[in-house]
Every structure is written in structure tokens, then in C-alpha cells.
Amino acid sequence: MLWALMGVFAGACIAVQAPINASLGKALQVPVAAAAVSFLAGGVVLWALAFLYSHVTSTPINFAAPERWTLIAGGLLGAFYVFSNITLTPMIGAAAVMALSVAGQLLAGLMLDKVGFMGMAVREISVGRVAGAILLVAGAVMIRFL
Image (cartoon, rainbow, N blue to C red; front, side, top):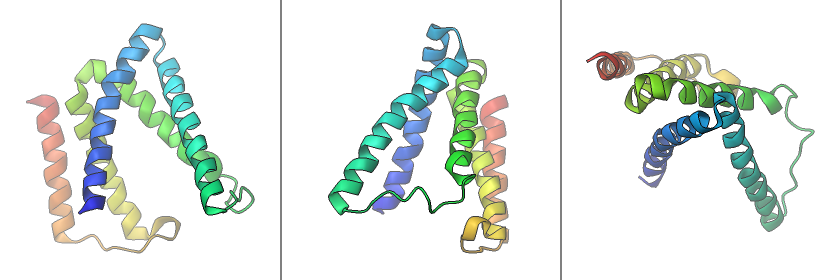
């Protein structure tokens, strides 16, 4: 239950972040600058937490272990996501951006589960999962257009 609540809270943070960053983009007059500020602030906090965790647990950060492309891939995808939210929120509203984002996440998640992307456990696409995805996509369309 705690993990589910954490997921819901994380989603709420993203919903609140979108209009904050959109407002920042408007004030800075360059939306991509708002994304850069957002990532810089988040990066500083995350590095502080990473070094604190490393120190407290006596676990060194092993930069040599991961494949090189994985060191930047997540950041590039996250940057596109944040930039898209900053750009789209003033145009179509926070609810529509969140609904479409979640729909995209779910559809991609289904495919990633199906193939076991990056060593994840393979989870078959069932009728229930497809029905849930269809309902979510329908909800996203309804939020955007109705």
C-alpha cells in the first residue's frame, strides 16, 4: 500500500510540476530554459541525496559499471518529457497533458513488459491489460476534447 501511495504522490508531483514549469517558461520567455532550470534544481538535490546515501551506506557510486549510453538516455527522455509538459500545458491544460502522458506511459509500459526491456520480467499482454489501456486512452481523449 505504501508503494502505491508513493506512486500516486509521484504522479501528483508531476501534475503540479507542469503548471509551475509552464509559468517559469513564460516568465523566462524560453520554455526550454525552464526545463533546464528544473533539471538543474532536481540534479543538485539528487546528487546531494546520492552522495549522502553513498556515505551513510558506505556504498561507492560505480560509474564504470553501467553501459555508457544508459548514463544519458534517461536524462534525454526526461528532458523531452519536461519540455513537452512545459510547452503543452499552456496550450491544452494540465489535465489533458497529464492524461495524454499517462496514456503514453501505459502503452509504452505494456510494450516494455511484453518484451522484458532491459532485463525486466516479461509480462504478457492480457485482455484485462488491453481493456485497461483502452479505457485510459479513451479517458485521455475525453479529457482533451470533451
